[in-house]
Length: 218
Image (tube, rainbow, N blue to C red):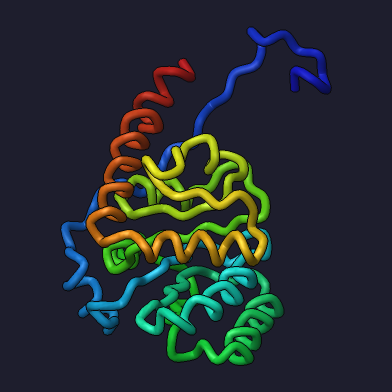
């Protein structure tokens, strides 16, 4: 707006987006996985939210296929509402061609509020290989729920996450970067991933709480 419309700095204000969900369920990892019938020892990558092409699920599937060759205990949990049936079919056909059926848990459809915490509690890493984004409610929700975040350095994700301190960043959503990012997440211990998740949770609940956003906006 400053560049294209010539507005003075004082006339432009940014209203941050806060997390939609931030109350942790109290369900632990073991209980959540028992409820979802998932292996308690697997490293689970979560992709949750409305299924759209810009979110890079196709790249994630190809990267995950590369990953499970050496990390067969990894799983990909995909939960969300597919708005484009054709795109969903392409993703499922790609998954089948990559022989990933036994490594992916699909939960397709609207995700009710009570399931949001359950999916996050069962996961080790929230994956966001976004190709382009302004800001993401799914990302902020994962951050507020204390899950280790692995996201592309685009838009608001790159503005919020400090790589290696409060999460993990991938420079692009290209295949090689996503594979590298997922391997980097796997190389961490569970405690290290949890530490990153809790550090980002503290930051988001402080800097991006709706109370603080409201006060800044007023």
